[in-house]
Length: 179
Image (tube, rainbow, N blue to C red):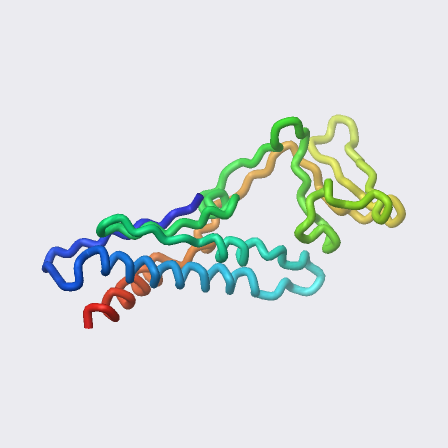
């Protein structure tokens, strides 16, 4: 889970109380994060590349805001968001030998196990001694999935808005209830 935490410090004893400021800041940042993720999801895929899977749109729909006193916590519980932001290594799940990485437009949003064998026949090609293999369409030889023992995901801080935009959204939202 990826989280943004905002602590509102009311050193000047401004009105309204801290909780209302935290609530406003939380709503403002939550809206910014949702819009950022939706924009990221809706940007068109370049010609010939994989179609968008809707991942970031799903992440936008999962955004929640929790207020506890003067603290607003914006969470994105969509699986994989923290991995995209911080980076890391992904290994196959229990009982699996490899990760299946989509390589063909027909695989968009589908897991390898979701292919109907009566409609698309895939064959496993994994040469001896190699660290990776493929799942190919039997008739055409098109590669549908690359099979690997692990995947290194590079950190991508752009999955969230820039810090300055987050602070601006929080400040704008708080100013709107103070003024």
